[in-house]
Every structure is written in structure tokens, then in C-alpha cells.
Amino acid sequence: MNPLLERLGTYPLAAFQDLARTMAAEGVPLHDFSVGDPVEPTPPFVRQALIEGLGEVSQYPTAAGLPQLRAAIAAWVERRFGVRVDPDRHVLPTAGSKEAIFHLPLGILDPHGDRRAVLWGDPGYLVYERGQLFAGGTSDPVTLAHETGWRLELGDLASRRLDAACIAWVNYPHNPTGAVVDLDYHRRALDTARDRGLVLASDECYADIHPEEGPRPPSALQAAADDLEGLVVAFSLSKRSGMTGYRCGALVGDPDLIRAQRILRPNIGTASPEFVQHAAIAAWGEDTHAVQRRGVFNAKRAIVLDFFDGAGIAVSGSAATFYLWFAAPGGDDAAYAEALLRHRVIASPGRAFGPAGRGWLRLALVPSVEGCKEAVAIWRDAIASGTLPGHD
Ligand SMILES: Cc1ncc(COP(=O)(O)O)c(C=O)c1O
Image (cartoon, rainbow, N blue to C red):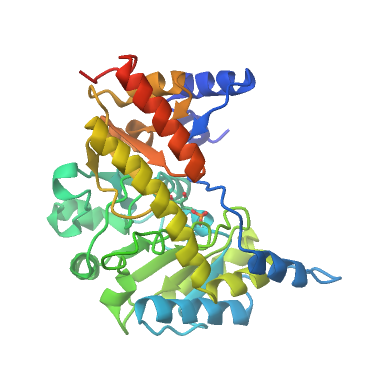
């Protein structure tokens, strides 16, 4: 067996997971804020497009995807970010953004070369590292911190780290912290990446999940404008359109990087089935459902933030995405998560996203608005009765 499977497969919080599973099996109703997989229904017009796309014969989808899908993605990029991209050269539909992130290094990394590392932010989405390792590369996590807004500043890294890397992943709005960056950040990151000859890969799967007021999160595509050299951006319909189960995303960027993926992907056979691509065309082509979904997440966000405020629980980041990132009362994220679990509320200990997540917890605003109200009431009572650690 590939030793990586043993090494990466063991989850650091097995005891915590076991306890959650035991409680669920005992029929204890749980308020589960752990996995970022929302329960709001997929918009009916998207489901309808899938049904209508289901022909009598179903053949292999191509790696390049349906031309209408590439056009729909390019049109969304232009509406959302004001950037024009060529659907045929700059756009690649993917089966969700996770597989695209995992497979990206296979089209970039030379496993026998000297630039084998991936730079990525800790805490962060672990797939950046995993894709690189399975492709024969190495991992160089960059510690992020509350004090610097959880920003990965490429330009602050030592030359030797930049010279050893072939890809730098940035992810704003950020999972797990919900931190955001401005357009200047993307300009700095792209300048540094180009200067140092590494690919800037920007995971923007939460681009459309943000509060309604204030500026919308910018894209690294805006920093690149009409020259996409050295840049690739990952997008997703999962969160924007409630389509986690459909598996639809996109890579947009440097035509050479897109071409490498198009050459690679027929070897793997990873592509959304064409009936799913028809649903994706409908979803990328419509924006009001995304506004409505944001409204629901923002309502949940307000309920929990109001409670945190009253309880004196300190929040960091949490400016966009449907995640709230808060400091563990008492300082120990694992102990606090376990104590919360005993009250039937599941939050993710920050260390699940890398060592720099210690001391913090992530809440994914996944339960319904009612579920959020119930969980907050339980939590408030637990603090009042002194059964949660770290609340004086
Ligand atoms: C930061 C980040 N990137 C990518 C993904 C993958 O999303 P999907 O494969 O559903 O597009 C997730 C999922 O939670 C995520 O949090």
C-alpha cells in the first residue's frame, strides 16, 4: 500500500469523531456544524435542467466539457469580476473544485525536478498539500495568524522557500477562518509568483458567499486582468448554488496551465456527466438564487454572531464564507469541541485544519436557521450552568 495513505488517512481527532458517531448511533439529535455541506435545497430550475439534460443515450463526457458550459462559466466570470476570458483557452469545467485542486499538480509538477514544493496556508484546506504529495511533491505549509488577518503573504517568505516551490495556493474567502483579502493582496501575490516563476493558484470557491453589505470579495483574475500568465483560479457551484452533490466547478486561467489539464484529464476520466453539465449551465447563468442563498447564510451568521457577542466569545476572520472562526474559551480547541459535543453541538477543532489552527474552532453554518437558534440556546444554557470550560 502507498505509505501516504497510512500517513494521511489517519484523522488526528479520531476519539472526537468516535464520540460523535456513538452519540448519533444512540439516537441523540446533534446540531452538526462540522462539515461544510449545507442542507438548503438546490434551486428547482437547476434540478429541472439536469432532468432535461438526461438523454436516452449517455456517452462519456469530454475533458474540455460542453462548449455551452465553458461559455456560461466565462459569462459568469465577466458578470461577477468584470474580467473577460476566452471560454476555449482559459476555461476548464471540473467535477467540483476539490478534484481540480488535487489534480492540478499532476499537470505542473516535475517529480524529478528541484521545484517540488507546494506553499499553502496553515490552517487551511488540506487538499492543496495532498494533491502535491500524491503527485510526488513536497509540502511547505505557511503559518497563518490572527494578527495578520490569516493572510498568506508570499512576498514575506524566504527566497529559498519560493525557489523550492512550483505552486502557491491562496484561498480567500478563506476556509476555515472566513478571512478575506482586497485586490491589492492579489496583485502582490501575483507579482511575487511571477517574479519567482511559480504558479499562483487561487481557490475562490467561496467567492459568492459573503455579507450583502460592503465590497464583494475580489478575484485574483482581476489582478491579472488581460494577462493570465502563471495564474489559475478554482471556482465551484457547490456552495454558490447548493450543488455539493452534483460535483461542478471550474479552473480559469493561464492557457498553458489549462491546456496541461486538458491533456492530463483524459488519462483520469474525471469530468461531470453531461446531464450534470446542463444543470451547471443553468446555475452559472443565473445570479438571483445565489443572492437568496447568501440571505439564508447571513441570517444564520447574525444569530450566532449575536450569541458570541453576548457570551464574550472572540471571533476572528469570519468576514465571508459560511464559516465562523472563534477562539476556544479556555484556549484548548479539542477540549472545548468535546465539551460542546456532550451538549450535542458539533464544531470543528481548529487543529483539524493544521497545527496553526490550535486554540480556535470552526462553525460551518450548515444547520437550518431554526437549528442555529436551538444550538445557540443549548450553548447559552451550558455556559450559564458552568458545564463548558473556559467561561468564568
Ligand atoms: C477551501 C475549499 N476549497 C475547495 C473545496 C471543494 O469544494 P467542491 O469540490 O465541492 O467544489 C472546499 C470544500 O469544502 C473548500 O472548503
